[in-house]
Length: 209
Length: 244
Image (tube, rainbow over all chains, first blue to last red; front, side, top):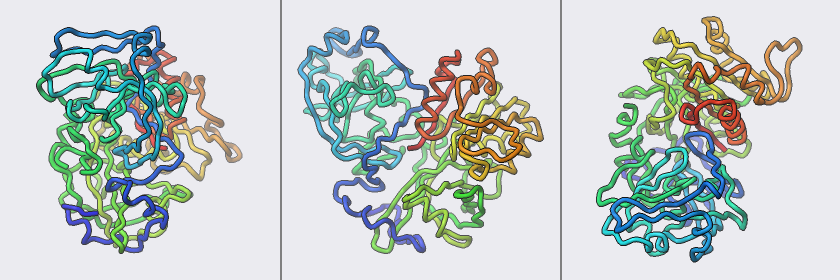
């Protein structure tokens, strides 16, 4: 592990750390710890609760024609099961989480676009920005099942984004659609000082990292 | 706006521990001197990084518990069983040590003294830490904004910042403490868990249009936020920070 801030030259007097914390060193991005069986919940406001009959998913913006899917139509799309490690910017990582949902490749395949960016929008007003190249080719999903069961509201149900290669704030809960654009528009946390891209392996936590 | 405060690159820096004081049974207040500290907003946090001799590092986030104008930047750390960082900070760290950190971080869960709305704070356990900063800032700025704090703790020995909270109560802040597990003889506060009735009786009503901050463990925060929305508060008026 290296630090461009020169942190390696400083030692915390008397700190050794837990022996087992080093066990997964190759699997943990810098500054993260394994939360084990826990699954912390983080959000900025109250948990919205949208019934499936009131839920839809739209793909809009710079597209040949906007798309709107009902819950039923979403359910009929080809589905994938994925097992991935996830990494939250608040330092916890969770290994081997299992999800089921629809690949963003499938959803973006419903439109023609030359956009390079998207803004995911959600119930509760949350947004997050993503580069299309970070979500293409099997790297992102809209998931509605976790660990074999319907996704609980506090974890983003009925459906959330899953972008495991980036910090977990990019995996927006309660997602309702994607706005495609040629320009990068910062989302909620990205406007408040968090990194525009958020690659955990590059430790891109905050603007300027 | 607050967000602009963290646009510059956040570099790691060394703070010097000026004092470590007992804040509650298993919590310590770390008072830090940080050369060139640019100041912070009440509600913001810092990232702390510990480095072991073999290069192993651990990072955690802690809310700042002191007001922006305070002479030290204070963190209140609750020791978690088996917590490798909190155990170090509460049991090993002492005055004169150095601590590596960066911040301040966060532009959403902050209170601005120029906000006119009544201020409602709801804390579970060590989630009261950012509110200690907000209350001290409220006092320091001579703010006329009415404030209420509803604070759920296990027992009186677990209440953080007890003396300061009594001082705030003495200057007109509505301080309600609910002790969930044990209450001392003659306890005049609330007992048991925070319920919808507790929220109705001790939180500014929706028609007062308060700005509400909720901080604590996930189960507490979920229950409180759901209760507040059910009671008629706008979801957009409720700002949340949580742990666990």
